[in-house]
Length: 307
Image (cartoon, rainbow, N blue to C red; front, side, top):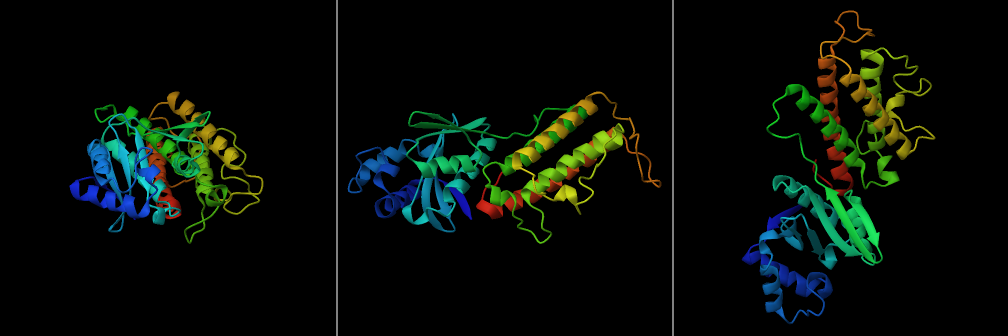
């Protein structure tokens, strides 16, 4: 489990020892530094120590990462720790720190020749721009609705949108194989979870609330548990677009309705038809539950955590 430890004097000495014994000099210091000049290393890192963290794996320091007040980040990892997902996990934890520090975006710069750094940035969902041999990356930091928001309706709707976005963020950077691989005994996959949530949106707002003539509100009737199944011909982009379309239609329906409006189609004879208010809370809890499940699956996949 990777964690970050604020850099202090003892941590600086641990980083120096690591830089000398298990790192490439050009990675840890500006060009030209050599391990036989330890005082230069100390002076350089003391200059931004307030923004720096040791990357710690268990009880072992394996690298350094920083986060400035402007959201700039950069890191290096020991040679012996490369290829184990350390960079991905460290950046995801920096994004968590950015939330606490009210930093709207985390940014990084590297070169096209640094394939490992580019791969890490893409893995954590950064938007990457290439200009010649320069690479600029930006990670938008996810924030919950404003803490001074008092309107319960707006609060409910903004939290629902926060979770809609969170589900898609969890899929960013995952490979096609990872999206279609289950890590739980029940067998669902991350891509299938998004398909299911698309049908949740379709069913509660379009089919139940306003009674749209939806032919298959639970997906392909020829496939068992269709809304939880990535069928032949289903693509990641297709499922994503279907999900976004259902969310957009649900917003339209909600904006045109009153919270007291009841579902015009309802099949449970022993319970009253639900109101829009009830449906919104039900769908919100559905997202919160499934986003938590995706949190665990993503962490098991590559160590990425956070909102």
